[in-house]
Image 1: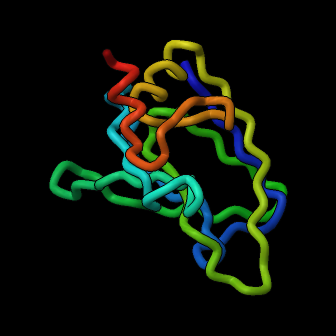
Image 2 (image 1 turned 90 degrees about the vertical axis):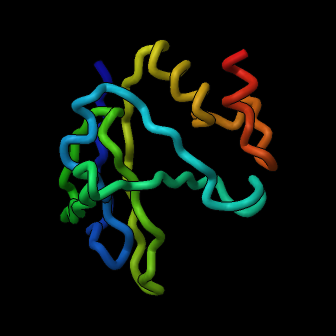
Length: 132
């Protein structure tokens, strides 16, 4: 089992990049392939995923008031967009539990969990190397 708790330090809205998720996407208990949003680590660390509405992938938003908590499983497709508000922050405190088997599976797909992970950010092919 995995569990992610996110505490909203500030109000989180669609405009300042609240959590987005795909309902039901965690039912398969499989991690989907992600791709880097930027072309190098210097440009950004964000990942993206292709959604397929024909397979039921419908993105929903989860705005939260300051002090609210969201809880979800690691297998749920989730993320947040950039903050488009020049005058409002969107700070969140995240506590995540993932067993080693899930962390290992994520790293094979190219996810990182710290700056100690060895990833070739220029090609983002580290996940392929770990599968060998």
